[in-house]
Amino acid sequence: MSDQSSEKKPDDQEGEAAGPKGFLKRLGPGLITGASDDDPSGIGTYSQAGAQLGYGIGWTMLLTFPLMVAIQEISGRVGSVTGRGISGNVCRHYPASLLHLIVSLLFIANTINIAADLGAMADATKLLVGGHGIIYVVLFGALSVGAQIFFDYKRYVSVLKWLTLCLFSYVAALAVVKVDWSAALTGILLPQITWSGSYLTTIVAILGTTISPYLFFWQASQEAEDERIDPAKAPLIERPIGAAMEFSRIRADTIVGMAFSNLIALSIIITAAATLNASGKTDIETSAQAAEALRPIAGVFAEWIFALGIVGTGLLAIPVLAGSTAYAVGEGQRWLVGLDRKPREAVAFYSVLALSAAIGIALNFTSINPISALYWSAVINGVLAVPVMVLLMVMSRRKDVMGDFVIKGPLHWLGWLSTAAMAISVVAMVVGIFL
Image (cartoon, rainbow, N blue to C red; front, top):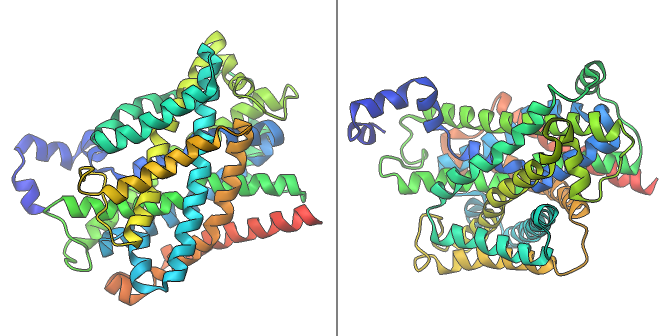
């Protein structure tokens, strides 16, 4: 770190050391992870939850915030300590059969999520300009993959972040729509649980879209890649100097990213409850219906703001979905991986990335309902998250993996609490469906 800072100008050092600008510069994988968490799948799931269950589902956001911060921080620490992503560590310390099972399930879940996101992006675009949805699916899919392979990814993300600012329209809507704040606060602070298959499935969908497996793999791999491309850095297990500062950065980065994610999610739920649920629209089937939640603040521009939010978050999330798949497969096979590498350097890595996106595009040629697909992709992520979280927690306690930096103390127990909450919700969903 000292070598790197010595090469910078004094004003650059001051900018990084203090003030909001310096703080934002230090944010990295955690912020990107949080931003990509509110992908079209998330928007669709939160809108559906708010419309169907009203304010009473808001408590899930209060519950998930500390849980998602813990599991994402643990993922980031694994990458920073070992210099490898989750898959890269699994292939070195666990049987190949376990690696292949986890990576295969991740590939399937991510591909379905990509398909659902592309379908929603196409549906939202068709709402504005008409045309054939499948054309937009192909265009958005090709743009996402092409930009990730041939453009500088960090610049690509910096542009897309401006589009995701459309999501703050849901925050602004809270000041305009008629919100029953007494009911909203009750819903946030006092869990209201209904023992039914549909209710419990919605809980799993919400947990699955906020605590998603691809986010674990992504943050761990990005922390490892940041160390690989920065000559002033090295895996903490090899160079432990400055570990406390690095862990502090990861925690701050993760808290900011997850707070952003949950603020938007809670705003979407409350806005949908105050508009759609209050007017009796409890089942969202199209993007036009989902956009209705923004009409009180945006008027005739509601569809535009909704569509821009869907497209912006989709273009940000699809590279993360496809990228996390490529990292998982590539690290497991010990290929050269990394979004900073040229296509010729990492052909296999980029081929997996493109294949996942291509299958996601192909799935849209079937007769799937975009909003329904978003919801069920979140459920699938919730189910898959359980075994991945168990593996992550066990791995983070292994001294042969983490050295002197094994996860312990409150963070360790909070990580297990997150895992238990996800597991209980999945079991309750299964029981609720069959009883």
